[in-house]
Image (cartoon, rainbow, N blue to C red; front, side, top):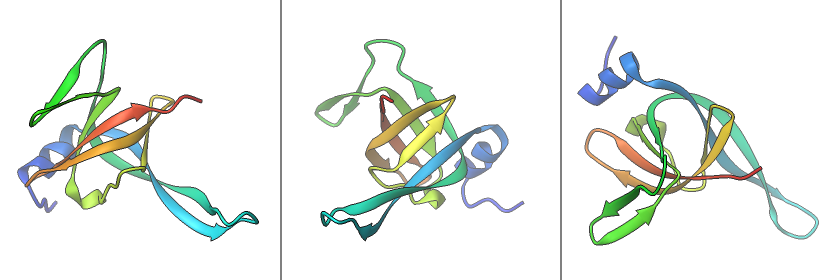
Length: 111
């Protein structure tokens, strides 16, 4: 096995199996709005669900979140993509790119 970073090695060995739903825009509908579809991609990640009133401090900004995800930069995650895990869907609201990995702040999507 070849790993790009130590984080990728740890992620491969110990990460959870999660589904990344990549958002894609298709042709426009009769009203001129793009049709939105999702491509599901299995990825490895570490995820933490907020269990109460936890908040993230980003510089001088305090953010509320429903879940927090750490994963490899190779997945090219973008805001508005979605994560499926344990029959729950989360929308990626913020992304922080680090040298070895990506941190994603997630908001739960209500069905």
